[in-house]
Amino acid sequence: MTNPPETEQRGLSRYIPLSIILLVAVIGIFTLRDYLSFETLRDNRMALMQFRDTNYAGTVLAFIATYVVVVAFSLPGATVLTLTGGFLFATFPGAFFNMAGATIGATLIFLAARWGLGDRLAERIDASEGRIKRIKDGIDENQWSMLFLIRLVPAVPFFIANLLPAFLEVPLHRYVISTFFGIMPGAVVYTSVGAGLGEVFERGETPDLGVIFEPRILLPLLGLCALAALPIAIKALRGGKSL
Image 1 (tube, rainbow, N blue to C red):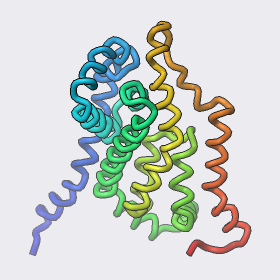
Image 2 (image 1 turned 180 degrees about the vertical axis):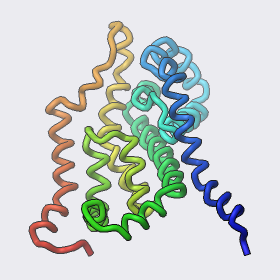
Image 3 (image 1 turned 90 degrees about the vertical axis):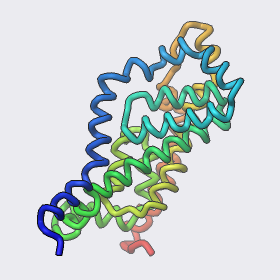
Image 4 (image 1 turned 45 degrees about the horizontal axis):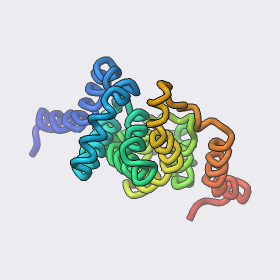
């Protein structure tokens, strides 16, 4: 029979991965902001291009690994890395490399959060009553739509979109698929901005990161959001539940 100290120790061990992520994230905010920046990319662009030209496969692997670490530990610089992916590898396959790194990193933090808090929190919500329980039930009935919505809507922080599903019993395969395809529009936009950084560097300017809010970009994104929300609206009108 397991004694209480061992049980308590095993329970506490569940929080280790998420605690490490939070600790590294806090440290990274104060120590890495000046390194993972547009200025760093500008100042080291020639060295990066030379390394890419001499070792393309190694550059791809190193880039994706860096992206995974940045996203998994919620470090600053994800936008700069997306631009770097476009600058080094063009819009395609740069967008794919960005999406792969972001999806793997997001999955790692999702698993850490679920292992540490997700199951217990979900059990408490299921056992509760009131508004929070109704919100969770609504999300459960429309998981695919909600998962795509939180990825497509530019106003939802990436960190929140990574953690929230872990507390709502979202299956891993749904999380991975919706993350990969849900971030695709934004990834392609920012990767294409990165692909044009050569001219930006020559003019001594900075990239326009607000491009995603321009009508030619924002309106199609809102259209995708409306498409993702359509099953929810139809279900609400019919008063039915998902299959």
